[in-house]
Length: 151
Image (tube, rainbow, N blue to C red; front, side, top):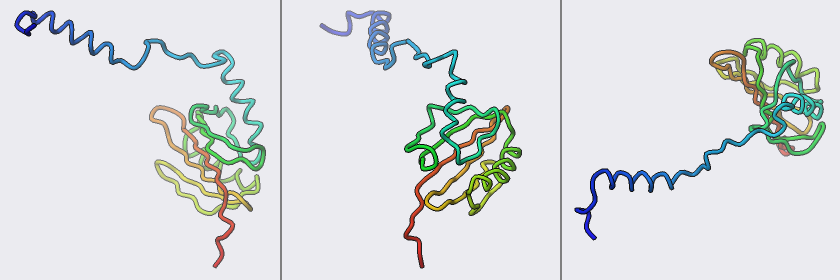
């Protein structure tokens, strides 16, 4: 069989069929679980974070949050979406975080603001990223503190 017997339209049709079979998706978008109740479940889950300040109205980004442990010994990344601007959030965390027993190590106010705090056995880094249209994203990372940092 030679390619001379195929018309350009037939060849194009075969290529489109072949490329269509390469698509990785099934054409169905996954639906979030508890669609009507997602904000309530996210709000309720903030109760396990009693050692860090959470801005009023913040919503947890469950796809980008990874938490290990519980209560005041958790480590991981907590990602929040807020309607507050980055300046107000920076001031909020600068004022409220020490009230939860954290000692400030350093802070940088910029397009992506960063605040770093420590406790006895953990380090907290807060990144505040202004969104293009409205609000901000807050990424709080808590990691174990190296206890062998002597001179």
